[in-house]
Length: 291
Ligand SMILES: C[S@@+](CC[C@H](N)C(=O)[O-])C[C@H]1O[C@@H](n2cnc3c(N)ncnc32)[C@H](O)[C@@H]1O
Image 1 (cartoon, rainbow, N blue to C red):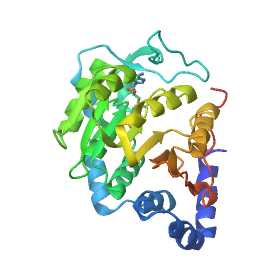
Image 2 (cartoon, protein in one colour):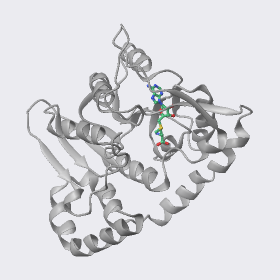
Image 3 (cartoon, rainbow, N blue to C red):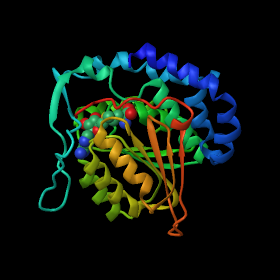
Image 4 (spheres, rainbow, N blue to C red):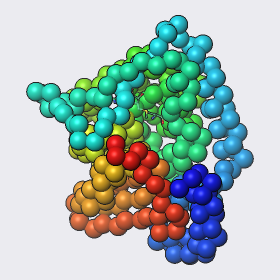
């Protein structure tokens, strides 16, 4: 479907489902996720969010001037069924590829996705966040803009870590950037007995890698903590990974918000609820077909 076609379908569904969204979905959905769900349904920012998004976005144009390197390297998202581990059981990352600094102005969370993340953590009262995939620090800036939050964020590319630091320093110094591969950093955090209220998994978008990192971070999370997955409609394979999470008895609640999938760590009682905004809005098409 074309972009305009999707926009029109979305508008029609929103009008048709306006009262069902308010009177059925929001009545069922736990209050802490209402802000995020409302953003998807109404597509509107508050005046403060608009101001913040403009301030965060202003960093993009500065990125090329922050490096003298001809190219900045980052780890790409691997294709489906390419997951491999080394002898120690650590996941092998995707390809490490260089591209012009200008190309990195376009990566990282958009204003919509950033505000969505912000509403998820603010709504759930999350204080300490672990992020897999720092990139240039846009999602990190949205997290740190929520008063009282602390962030540990992992990124394999040293050049991106340096840029992200400057981006996030504008909002808070309560961040720790680990310039390592995800598995190496998780091993270190486990050895330090770190715990988190929320983990945002936003790198290596492949089903087996996603399930692998989900299992690895679980020991750092107490019941009620969140795991937020990015790009659950990235590929068929990533979407299957998300469906797996929805069925996983380790999570007491799962919320499909299209651009983010939220899992709430359960307390072992086996109770399970799933909330799906796709019952009220047209579901996005899989972004990368045959990936
Ligand atoms: C999609 S970007 C993250 C975007 C960022 N969270 C945001 O929303 O602004 C994914 C990042 O993860 C990094 N990455 C991917 N796989 C990795 C791995 N196995 N270890 C460390 N970094 C990795 C990439 O270099 C890339 O910068």
